[in-house]
Length: 434
Image 1 (tube, one colour):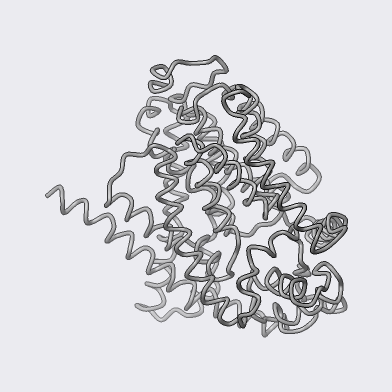
Image 2 (tube, helix red, strand yellow):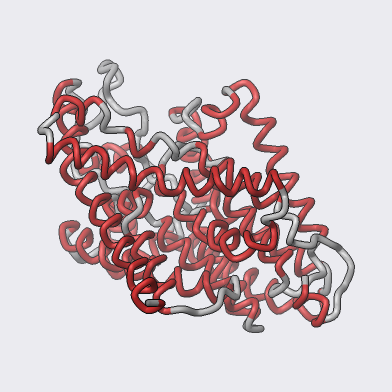
Protein backbone atom coordinates (compact mmCIF):
# COMPACT_ATOMS: atom_id res chain seq x y z
CA UNK A 1 0.00 0.00 0.00
CA UNK A 2 2.77 2.44 0.94
CA UNK A 3 4.64 1.71 -2.29
CA UNK A 4 1.48 2.30 -4.31
CA UNK A 5 1.04 5.68 -2.65
CA UNK A 6 4.66 6.53 -3.46
CA UNK A 7 4.16 5.67 -7.13
CA UNK A 8 0.90 7.62 -7.30
CA UNK A 9 2.63 10.99 -6.72
CA UNK A 10 4.89 10.86 -9.82
CA UNK A 11 2.02 9.48 -11.92
CA UNK A 12 -0.15 12.47 -10.97
CA UNK A 13 2.82 14.77 -11.55
CA UNK A 14 3.26 13.30 -15.04
CA UNK A 15 -0.43 13.89 -15.81
CA UNK A 16 -0.14 17.48 -14.55
CA UNK A 17 2.97 18.07 -16.64
CA UNK A 18 1.30 16.62 -19.73
CA UNK A 19 -1.70 18.88 -19.27
CA UNK A 20 0.53 21.95 -19.04
CA UNK A 21 2.46 21.07 -22.19
CA UNK A 22 -0.84 20.44 -24.00
CA UNK A 23 -2.14 23.81 -22.82
CA UNK A 24 0.96 25.63 -24.04
CA UNK A 25 1.09 23.93 -27.43
CA UNK A 26 -2.62 23.69 -28.24
CA UNK A 27 -4.18 26.66 -26.43
CA UNK A 28 -1.68 29.36 -25.42
CA UNK A 29 0.57 29.42 -28.51
CA UNK A 30 -2.31 29.24 -31.05
CA UNK A 31 -4.02 32.12 -29.26
CA UNK A 32 -0.84 34.20 -29.38
CA UNK A 33 -0.38 33.43 -33.08
CA UNK A 34 -3.98 34.43 -33.84
CA UNK A 35 -3.73 37.57 -31.75
CA UNK A 36 -0.40 38.48 -33.33
CA UNK A 37 -1.87 38.15 -36.82
CA UNK A 38 -4.88 40.26 -35.87
CA UNK A 39 -2.70 43.05 -34.48
CA UNK A 40 -0.02 42.64 -37.16
CA UNK A 41 2.48 41.96 -34.41
CA UNK A 42 5.69 40.38 -35.78
CA UNK A 43 6.68 36.83 -34.86
CA UNK A 44 10.06 35.42 -35.81
CA UNK A 45 12.05 32.76 -33.95
CA UNK A 46 11.15 34.43 -30.60
CA UNK A 47 14.19 32.87 -28.95
CA UNK A 48 15.73 34.76 -26.03
CA UNK A 49 19.02 33.08 -26.89
CA UNK A 50 19.06 34.48 -30.43
CA UNK A 51 20.15 38.07 -29.53
CA UNK A 52 23.02 36.70 -27.45
CA UNK A 53 23.96 34.09 -30.08
CA UNK A 54 23.92 36.54 -32.99
CA UNK A 55 25.86 39.11 -30.95
CA UNK A 56 28.46 36.46 -30.05
CA UNK A 57 28.78 35.35 -33.67
CA UNK A 58 29.17 38.87 -35.00
CA UNK A 59 31.75 39.79 -32.34
CA UNK A 60 33.86 36.63 -32.43
CA UNK A 61 33.74 35.95 -36.18
CA UNK A 62 33.46 39.45 -37.65
CA UNK A 63 34.69 41.80 -34.92
CA UNK A 64 31.42 43.76 -34.85
CA UNK A 65 30.08 45.54 -31.77
CA UNK A 66 27.08 43.48 -30.54
CA UNK A 67 25.64 46.56 -28.81
CA UNK A 68 25.56 48.61 -32.02
CA UNK A 69 22.25 49.71 -33.64
CA UNK A 70 23.17 47.80 -36.81
CA UNK A 71 23.48 44.48 -34.97
CA UNK A 72 20.29 45.27 -33.01
CA UNK A 73 18.40 45.66 -36.29
CA UNK A 74 19.75 42.31 -37.49
CA UNK A 75 18.70 40.72 -34.21
CA UNK A 76 15.17 42.07 -34.68
CA UNK A 77 15.00 40.60 -38.18
CA UNK A 78 15.61 37.15 -36.75
CA UNK A 79 13.81 37.49 -33.42
CA UNK A 80 10.67 39.21 -34.71
CA UNK A 81 10.91 38.44 -38.42
CA UNK A 82 11.44 42.11 -39.32
CA UNK A 83 12.74 45.33 -37.85
CA UNK A 84 10.45 47.00 -35.32
CA UNK A 85 8.63 50.08 -36.54
CA UNK A 86 8.02 52.83 -33.92
CA UNK A 87 5.09 54.10 -36.02
CA UNK A 88 3.20 50.84 -35.48
CA UNK A 89 1.44 51.01 -32.10
CA UNK A 90 1.14 47.22 -31.78
CA UNK A 91 4.82 46.48 -32.32
CA UNK A 92 6.58 45.10 -29.19
CA UNK A 93 8.34 47.57 -26.92
CA UNK A 94 11.24 45.22 -26.26
CA UNK A 95 13.93 46.09 -28.81
CA UNK A 96 15.68 42.73 -28.15
CA UNK A 97 19.13 44.26 -28.21
CA UNK A 98 22.29 42.64 -26.85
CA UNK A 99 21.78 43.72 -23.22
CA UNK A 100 24.07 41.16 -21.54
CA UNK A 101 27.68 41.56 -20.33
CA UNK A 102 29.93 40.88 -23.29
CA UNK A 103 31.56 37.89 -21.56
CA UNK A 104 28.43 35.83 -22.27
CA UNK A 105 29.94 35.37 -25.76
CA UNK A 106 32.59 33.05 -24.31
CA UNK A 107 29.90 30.61 -23.14
CA UNK A 108 28.29 30.76 -26.58
CA UNK A 109 31.56 30.50 -28.53
CA UNK A 110 31.14 26.75 -29.29
CA UNK A 111 27.84 27.48 -31.06
CA UNK A 112 28.81 30.33 -33.37
CA UNK A 113 29.67 27.97 -36.25
CA UNK A 114 26.28 26.22 -36.01
CA UNK A 115 23.06 27.27 -37.69
CA UNK A 116 20.60 28.74 -35.24
CA UNK A 117 18.14 25.93 -36.00
CA UNK A 118 20.70 23.52 -34.59
CA UNK A 119 21.45 25.82 -31.66
CA UNK A 120 17.75 25.89 -30.72
CA UNK A 121 17.54 22.09 -30.57
CA UNK A 122 20.79 21.71 -28.63
CA UNK A 123 19.91 24.46 -26.17
CA UNK A 124 16.42 23.03 -25.59
CA UNK A 125 17.81 19.72 -24.40
CA UNK A 126 20.80 21.28 -22.66
CA UNK A 127 18.57 23.57 -20.59
CA UNK A 128 16.23 20.66 -19.82
CA UNK A 129 19.16 18.68 -18.44
CA UNK A 130 20.29 21.76 -16.48
CA UNK A 131 16.85 21.88 -14.88
CA UNK A 132 16.90 18.23 -13.81
CA UNK A 133 20.40 18.56 -12.35
CA UNK A 134 19.43 21.78 -10.55
CA UNK A 135 16.64 19.93 -8.72
CA UNK A 136 19.17 17.39 -7.43
CA UNK A 137 21.56 20.15 -6.40
CA UNK A 138 18.90 22.19 -4.62
CA UNK A 139 17.80 19.11 -2.67
CA UNK A 140 21.39 18.51 -1.61
CA UNK A 141 21.95 22.17 -0.80
CA UNK A 142 18.83 22.33 1.35
CA UNK A 143 19.68 18.99 3.00
CA UNK A 144 16.33 17.51 2.01
CA UNK A 145 16.19 13.75 2.75
CA UNK A 146 16.71 11.86 -0.50
CA UNK A 147 13.75 9.91 -1.88
CA UNK A 148 13.72 8.81 -5.49
CA UNK A 149 9.93 9.09 -5.70
CA UNK A 150 9.90 12.55 -4.16
CA UNK A 151 12.73 13.69 -6.43
CA UNK A 152 11.02 12.23 -9.51
CA UNK A 153 7.78 13.99 -8.58
CA UNK A 154 9.60 17.30 -8.12
CA UNK A 155 11.40 16.94 -11.46
CA UNK A 156 8.19 16.08 -13.33
CA UNK A 157 6.29 18.98 -11.79
CA UNK A 158 9.09 21.40 -12.59
CA UNK A 159 9.40 20.12 -16.17
CA UNK A 160 5.64 20.52 -16.47
CA UNK A 161 5.45 24.00 -14.98
CA UNK A 162 4.71 27.02 -17.15
CA UNK A 163 7.87 28.94 -16.14
CA UNK A 164 10.05 26.00 -17.18
CA UNK A 165 8.16 25.39 -20.43
CA UNK A 166 8.42 29.07 -21.29
CA UNK A 167 12.11 29.04 -20.38
CA UNK A 168 13.11 26.04 -22.51
CA UNK A 169 10.85 27.13 -25.39
CA UNK A 170 12.51 30.55 -25.47
CA UNK A 171 15.96 29.10 -24.71
CA UNK A 172 16.21 31.45 -21.73
CA UNK A 173 19.68 31.58 -20.05
CA UNK A 174 17.97 31.88 -16.65
CA UNK A 175 17.82 28.06 -16.56
CA UNK A 176 21.60 27.84 -16.82
CA UNK A 177 22.00 30.57 -14.21
CA UNK A 178 19.69 28.65 -11.84
CA UNK A 179 21.97 25.62 -12.20
CA UNK A 180 25.06 27.74 -11.49
CA UNK A 181 23.45 29.20 -8.36
CA UNK A 182 22.55 25.72 -7.10
CA UNK A 183 26.05 24.46 -7.85
CA UNK A 184 27.58 27.41 -6.01
CA UNK A 185 25.50 26.66 -2.91
CA UNK A 186 26.42 22.97 -2.90
CA UNK A 187 30.11 23.75 -3.43
CA UNK A 188 30.07 26.22 -0.52
CA UNK A 189 28.46 23.70 1.82
CA UNK A 190 30.91 20.94 0.89
CA UNK A 191 33.89 23.22 1.50
CA UNK A 192 34.82 23.84 -2.15
CA UNK A 193 34.84 27.58 -1.61
CA UNK A 194 36.93 28.51 -4.65
CA UNK A 195 34.61 26.52 -6.93
CA UNK A 196 31.60 28.14 -5.28
CA UNK A 197 32.96 31.61 -5.97
CA UNK A 198 33.83 30.73 -9.57
CA UNK A 199 30.35 29.35 -10.29
CA UNK A 200 28.67 32.46 -8.90
CA UNK A 201 30.96 34.65 -10.99
CA UNK A 202 29.87 32.74 -14.09
CA UNK A 203 26.25 33.32 -13.05
CA UNK A 204 26.79 37.07 -13.40
CA UNK A 205 26.02 36.68 -17.11
CA UNK A 206 22.63 37.78 -15.77
CA UNK A 207 23.72 40.52 -13.34
CA UNK A 208 20.18 41.37 -12.22
CA UNK A 209 19.82 37.77 -10.99
CA UNK A 210 23.27 37.33 -9.46
CA UNK A 211 23.74 40.64 -7.64
CA UNK A 212 21.75 39.75 -4.50
CA UNK A 213 23.23 36.23 -4.06
CA UNK A 214 26.69 37.78 -4.51
CA UNK A 215 25.94 40.38 -1.83
CA UNK A 216 24.69 37.66 0.55
CA UNK A 217 27.83 35.61 -0.05
CA UNK A 218 30.14 38.57 0.52
CA UNK A 219 28.47 39.28 3.86
CA UNK A 220 28.95 35.62 4.77
CA UNK A 221 32.65 35.81 3.88
CA UNK A 222 33.09 38.99 5.94
CA UNK A 223 32.07 37.18 9.14
CA UNK A 224 35.15 34.93 9.07
CA UNK A 225 37.63 36.23 6.51
CA UNK A 226 40.43 33.86 7.45
CA UNK A 227 38.38 30.69 6.96
CA UNK A 228 36.19 31.89 4.10
CA UNK A 229 38.43 34.13 2.02
CA UNK A 230 38.95 31.36 -0.58
CA UNK A 231 35.38 31.99 -1.77
CA UNK A 232 36.20 35.65 -2.36
CA UNK A 233 39.39 34.88 -4.27
CA UNK A 234 37.60 32.33 -6.44
CA UNK A 235 34.88 34.83 -7.27
CA UNK A 236 37.27 37.75 -7.78
CA UNK A 237 39.65 35.71 -9.96
CA UNK A 238 36.86 34.54 -12.26
CA UNK A 239 35.46 38.06 -12.53
CA UNK A 240 38.94 39.36 -13.36
CA UNK A 241 39.22 36.79 -16.14
CA UNK A 242 35.75 37.72 -17.45
CA UNK A 243 36.50 41.44 -17.45
CA UNK A 244 39.99 41.17 -18.93
CA UNK A 245 38.90 38.82 -21.71
CA UNK A 246 35.90 41.03 -22.47
CA UNK A 247 38.07 44.14 -22.70
CA UNK A 248 40.41 42.29 -25.03
CA UNK A 249 37.69 41.29 -27.52
CA UNK A 250 35.73 44.57 -27.23
CA UNK A 251 37.62 47.52 -25.71
CA UNK A 252 35.36 49.90 -23.78
CA UNK A 253 32.55 47.37 -23.61
CA UNK A 254 31.45 48.43 -20.11
CA UNK A 255 30.20 51.79 -21.40
CA UNK A 256 28.37 50.09 -24.25
CA UNK A 257 26.81 47.62 -21.81
CA UNK A 258 25.72 50.45 -19.51
CA UNK A 259 24.03 52.24 -22.42
CA UNK A 260 22.31 49.01 -23.50
CA UNK A 261 20.94 48.45 -19.98
CA UNK A 262 19.81 52.08 -19.80
CA UNK A 263 17.95 51.73 -23.10
CA UNK A 264 16.39 48.47 -21.93
CA UNK A 265 15.10 50.10 -18.75
CA UNK A 266 13.70 52.99 -20.82
CA UNK A 267 11.67 50.95 -23.29
CA UNK A 268 10.58 48.42 -20.64
CA UNK A 269 9.47 51.14 -18.18
CA UNK A 270 6.32 50.43 -16.16
CA UNK A 271 6.31 46.71 -17.03
CA UNK A 272 8.09 45.32 -13.97
CA UNK A 273 6.62 43.09 -11.29
CA UNK A 274 6.73 45.90 -8.73
CA UNK A 275 5.05 48.31 -11.13
CA UNK A 276 2.13 45.90 -11.23
CA UNK A 277 2.21 45.26 -7.49
CA UNK A 278 2.46 48.77 -6.03
CA UNK A 279 2.27 51.12 -9.05
CA UNK A 280 5.23 52.70 -10.87
CA UNK A 281 5.31 55.60 -8.43
CA UNK A 282 6.34 53.45 -5.49
CA UNK A 283 8.09 50.55 -7.21
CA UNK A 284 11.63 51.93 -6.78
CA UNK A 285 11.10 52.53 -3.06
CA UNK A 286 9.69 49.04 -2.53
CA UNK A 287 12.60 47.57 -4.50
CA UNK A 288 15.07 49.29 -2.19
CA UNK A 289 13.19 48.14 0.92
CA UNK A 290 13.14 44.51 -0.22
CA UNK A 291 16.85 44.53 -1.04
CA UNK A 292 17.72 46.19 2.29
CA UNK A 293 15.59 43.65 4.16
CA UNK A 294 17.39 40.72 2.56
CA UNK A 295 20.78 42.29 3.23
CA UNK A 296 19.80 42.92 6.87
CA UNK A 297 18.79 39.28 7.32
CA UNK A 298 21.99 38.15 5.58
CA UNK A 299 23.99 40.32 7.98
CA UNK A 300 22.30 38.70 10.98
CA UNK A 301 23.08 35.15 9.83
CA UNK A 302 26.50 35.88 8.36
CA UNK A 303 28.32 33.95 11.10
CA UNK A 304 26.29 30.77 10.63
CA UNK A 305 27.56 27.67 8.93
CA UNK A 306 26.14 27.53 5.34
CA UNK A 307 24.33 24.32 6.28
CA UNK A 308 22.39 26.04 9.07
CA UNK A 309 18.66 26.55 8.32
CA UNK A 310 18.94 30.29 8.87
CA UNK A 311 21.66 30.59 6.25
CA UNK A 312 19.71 28.46 3.77
CA UNK A 313 16.57 30.50 4.34
CA UNK A 314 18.32 33.80 3.57
CA UNK A 315 19.67 32.46 0.28
CA UNK A 316 16.19 31.21 -0.68
CA UNK A 317 14.78 34.61 0.27
CA UNK A 318 17.35 36.30 -1.95
CA UNK A 319 16.19 34.27 -4.95
CA UNK A 320 12.52 34.94 -4.21
CA UNK A 321 13.32 38.65 -3.85
CA UNK A 322 14.96 38.60 -7.29
CA UNK A 323 11.69 37.36 -8.79
CA UNK A 324 9.70 39.96 -6.86
CA UNK A 325 11.99 42.77 -8.04
CA UNK A 326 12.40 41.50 -11.60
CA UNK A 327 12.50 44.28 -14.22
CA UNK A 328 9.90 42.45 -16.32
CA UNK A 329 6.92 40.16 -15.84
CA UNK A 330 8.49 37.17 -17.60
CA UNK A 331 7.25 34.05 -15.84
CA UNK A 332 10.39 32.03 -16.63
CA UNK A 333 12.10 33.89 -13.77
CA UNK A 334 9.92 31.90 -11.37
CA UNK A 335 12.15 28.84 -11.75
CA UNK A 336 14.18 30.62 -9.05
CA UNK A 337 11.29 30.01 -6.63
CA UNK A 338 12.03 26.27 -6.54
CA UNK A 339 14.53 26.31 -3.63
CA UNK A 340 12.19 28.53 -1.61
CA UNK A 341 9.28 26.16 -2.17
CA UNK A 342 11.43 23.13 -1.32
CA UNK A 343 12.71 24.85 1.83
CA UNK A 344 9.15 25.68 2.86
CA UNK A 345 8.00 22.08 2.24
CA UNK A 346 10.83 20.80 4.41
CA UNK A 347 10.18 23.27 7.25
CA UNK A 348 6.39 23.65 7.07
CA UNK A 349 5.48 20.88 9.57
CA UNK A 350 7.50 22.49 12.38
CA UNK A 351 5.83 25.85 11.70
CA UNK A 352 2.30 24.50 11.57
CA UNK A 353 1.43 25.97 14.96
CA UNK A 354 1.42 29.53 13.69
CA UNK A 355 -1.94 30.74 12.38
CA UNK A 356 -0.28 33.12 9.95
CA UNK A 357 2.10 30.42 8.71
CA UNK A 358 -0.79 27.95 8.27
CA UNK A 359 -2.85 30.50 6.36
CA UNK A 360 0.02 31.44 4.09
CA UNK A 361 0.91 27.79 3.59
CA UNK A 362 -2.62 26.99 2.46
CA UNK A 363 -2.58 29.97 0.13
CA UNK A 364 0.79 28.94 -1.29
CA UNK A 365 -0.46 25.42 -1.96
CA UNK A 366 -3.46 26.85 -3.81
CA UNK A 367 -1.27 29.18 -5.87
CA UNK A 368 1.16 26.40 -6.79
CA UNK A 369 -1.58 23.95 -7.75
CA UNK A 370 -3.77 26.47 -9.57
CA UNK A 371 -2.00 26.45 -12.99
CA UNK A 372 -2.41 22.69 -13.40
CA UNK A 373 -6.00 22.79 -12.17
CA UNK A 374 -6.79 25.61 -14.61
CA UNK A 375 -5.13 23.69 -17.46
CA UNK A 376 -7.23 20.62 -16.71
CA UNK A 377 -10.36 22.81 -16.69
CA UNK A 378 -9.57 24.37 -20.06
CA UNK A 379 -8.59 21.07 -21.64
CA UNK A 380 -11.71 19.38 -20.28
CA UNK A 381 -13.91 22.17 -21.63
CA UNK A 382 -12.25 21.92 -25.02
CA UNK A 383 -12.34 18.13 -25.34
CA UNK A 384 -15.66 17.31 -23.69
CA UNK A 385 -17.84 20.24 -24.69
CA UNK A 386 -16.03 21.71 -27.66
CA UNK A 387 -16.32 25.17 -26.09
CA UNK A 388 -13.59 26.70 -28.23
CA UNK A 389 -14.91 30.22 -27.65
CA UNK A 390 -14.70 29.85 -23.88
CA UNK A 391 -11.19 28.39 -24.11
CA UNK A 392 -9.96 31.28 -26.25
CA UNK A 393 -11.51 33.85 -23.94
CA UNK A 394 -10.13 32.19 -20.81
CA UNK A 395 -6.72 31.16 -22.20
CA UNK A 396 -4.88 33.12 -19.48
CA UNK A 397 -6.64 31.26 -16.67
CA UNK A 398 -3.53 29.27 -15.63
CA UNK A 399 -1.58 32.54 -15.18
CA UNK A 400 -3.94 34.14 -12.68
CA UNK A 401 -1.90 32.99 -9.67
CA UNK A 402 1.52 33.77 -11.14
CA UNK A 403 1.94 37.30 -9.82
CA UNK A 404 0.76 36.44 -6.30
CA UNK A 405 2.98 33.39 -5.88
CA UNK A 406 6.37 35.14 -5.36
CA UNK A 407 4.94 37.64 -2.85
CA UNK A 408 3.22 34.90 -0.85
CA UNK A 409 6.38 32.80 -0.76
CA UNK A 410 8.46 35.82 0.26
CA UNK A 411 6.17 36.58 3.21
CA UNK A 412 5.91 32.92 4.18
CA UNK A 413 9.68 32.49 4.35
CA UNK A 414 9.93 35.65 6.41
CA UNK A 415 7.42 34.49 9.02
CA UNK A 416 8.42 30.84 9.32
CA UNK A 417 8.88 30.54 13.10
CA UNK A 418 10.88 27.33 12.88
CA UNK A 419 14.01 29.01 11.54
CA UNK A 420 16.23 30.74 14.06
CA UNK A 421 17.88 33.90 12.77
CA UNK A 422 20.82 34.98 14.87
CA UNK A 423 24.16 36.68 14.40
CA UNK A 424 25.82 34.73 17.21
CA UNK A 425 28.42 32.15 16.34
CA UNK A 426 26.93 28.75 17.03
CA UNK A 427 28.47 25.39 17.59
CA UNK A 428 27.91 22.63 15.02
CA UNK A 429 25.46 20.99 17.39
CA UNK A 430 23.49 24.22 17.83
CA UNK A 431 23.46 24.80 14.08
CA UNK A 432 22.22 21.29 13.49
CA UNK A 433 19.33 21.86 15.86
CA UNK A 434 18.49 25.35 14.54
